[in-house]
Length: 355
Ligand SMILES: [Zn+2]
Image (tube, rainbow, N blue to C red; front, side, top):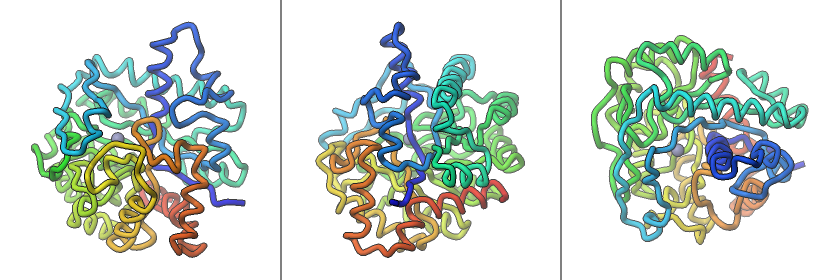
C-alpha cells in the first residue's frame, strides 16, 4: 500500500465553478464524481493517485481574466496584479464555491468528508476517505468587520490567505513576476492586523503563500501561530516573487511551521517558465533545498492542481505514483517518504489548530 499524499493546495472549486458557467446545462459536480477527466482532479483520479485529501481553495478569479499561462511560457514575465475586488462582488462567488464543495461531498456518497480537525483527517485516512479542508485563497470575501469570517468558520473554514496575488483591504499580494523578489508593496493594514488576531483566536491557519515580504514579516511579528506557506517553493532555486527567500524559510523553521512544495512549473524551474516539460529532478532541487533549510519535519506538498501547469511525468492527481516512485529513486528512506507524503502536514495542522 503506497503512502497516501496530503496536499496543501488545489483549485478544483474554481475549475468546477467556471465549468458550470460555460456549460450551464451540465452538472460539474456529478461529472467530477463520476470522472470528468478534465483538469487535474476528479474523484476516480483522486482515488487512483492515493490522495489523502488536502486544502480545497475558494478563490475569486480576477474580473477580466488577466491570467495567462502562455505569457509565462518564455520565462521573464510580469503579470500586473489585478485590481482589488470588493467584498460585495466577491462574497456571492465565495458562497457559490463553498456550495459546490458541499455538493461535491454529498454526491461523493461517503468518499469525501469535510474535516475541521486533525483527528477528523486521521479518521479519513484510516477509513480510506478523502479529507477535505475548506481554505480561502485571498480574503476578498471577508468584510473588514470580520462578520463573514464568523460565518465561513461555522461552514468549516480552517485556513485563510489574507491575499492572493492581488491587494485586499487586509494586505498586499505579490505579483506573478519572474525574476523578482517578494519585497514589493506595503504591510498589513489596520484591518489586516485585526484579521490576523481573529484567525489566531479561532485557530484558523494563516496562509502566507501569496503575500509580499512586508506582510509576511508583519504576520511573523504579530501571529502567535506557526508560519505556513501552503504552496510555495525556494526563491534561491527559482527567483519567482511567489517563492520564499532564505530569510523567510528560517522564520518558518523557527516558528515550527511548514511549506507545501508547489508543483507549478513556473515556481520550480530556474528559468521561471510555465511548461510541462519540467523534470522531477528540477522539483527535487526544491525539495532538497527546503529539507536542508526547514528540517525534515516541515516540508509537505501543495500541488496547485487545477491552478497551474505541472510536470508531465505527474500529469494530474492520478499520477502521484510518479512522485512516490521518484522519492525512492532519489534515496529518501521510508520514514522521510511518510513525512513528506502526509505526516508533516498532519503534525503542522495539529500545531496550528491546537491539537
Ligand atoms: Zn495560489
